[in-house]
Image (cartoon, rainbow, N blue to C red):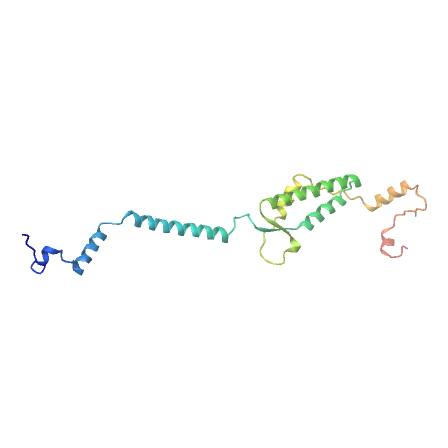
Length: 193
């Protein structure tokens, strides 16, 4: 026959291992921590640093656009055109030559302003700027235009007397007052005695 052993008769060590005490559990945890950092923890820290750097870069890109992208600049367009037209009027060129040169100047001015716009900058005419510190590109545009279309040279002014004599000679001198030299006393308004 088989002998049955009652569980009461068996010693507790033989039936099951004793449960570790709280002190033993803390010791086991500390020993695992002393073993070092595992690869999973390193990857998690690296991923967090990468996400933080990417977020900073995206924020910087959104808040501060590139140097020339979306930058406002001003141009004294009316001043550039007035300067050229006044020089053209004083150049002494005939009407056809002046009109052709002015048309070429305006075309080059349009090209220069379009080039500035292609670089991503927004060009405002000087009169549209009310306040703020906006860079002025007038000198750059003038240099680009005048490198292709030269500024008209002002014709030498002729004295009025020569113009009058030329006019009188062209009209045959009809009804022309006699030109007499005035003495210095008469010119001042005194009486010559």
